[in-house]
Image 1: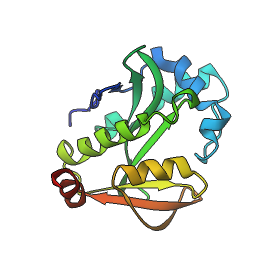
Image 2: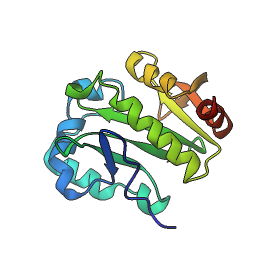
Image 3: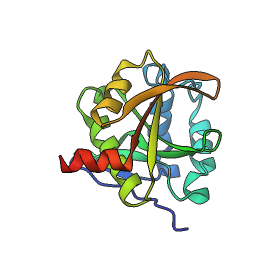
Image 4: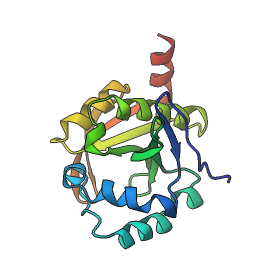
Length: 178
């Protein structure tokens, strides 16, 4: 299995696996209280913890894909992440994204998520992709809706009661040919 360390490029974003050089920006993202509010994860506490999280991220080695860092083309700056993650406890592939607040409201999450959905269906040949989101996270729910996902119940994931959204390859093909 060849890992997909570089993800899709969009008009404004490049996607690639994070490296040790990205630790400071990764720390800024994952220690920001507004960013972490609806994740169910504790904020990262130190630069060393950010470095370790990047070093220990297994997905590209174990399943060949994962959450890519999103680099803003005008500056080259890491502004967030977006990508697909296999959730063994659900036997599903989940789309996830997270951005620095300075980049909220610009359509970047939608742009990146659409590219990652297409990657999942076109390159990985997935049949379905889900999105899990806390009910209070209205902005992320809106992104999932904009990329064509439909709510399909609730799911308990890592002790969080999350809304479950999904899109199938057939649904996506119908959307892109309509």
